[in-house]
Length: 159
Image (cartoon, rainbow, N blue to C red; front, top):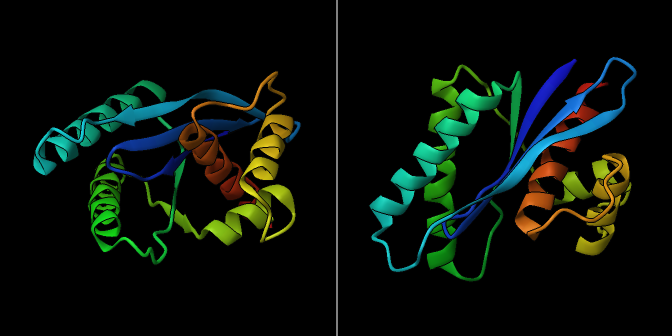
């Protein structure tokens, strides 16, 4: 059995999802949610909050592996820089926890979860719900995205 932490990085909202692959290869959502920070907080305080809360999650769940969504070019440079800073904090926390995080692009995640690299957000979320045998699509979207990152890692590491 393997427990993977998937992360959808962000400064205002960072999604996380812990997915276990059982011996029979079925997937199970262990925990998921978001770490949120207020835009009123100074940038350094937001990063400290992300770092501290992520460390608490790592200590609580002790994943075997981790995966993070790769930053892709965004039109809003300010937002891209903030997300890049959050990713840096995430990578530091994971490295300190002894994890070597895999990184996946949005298209790789869509392909691994929905079978189509150009799948829509709703398609991917519905596949996350089905693969994890959940009654509802996980909310908020960032949590569902993080679960998709973890599923991508489990599917990719099979081969």
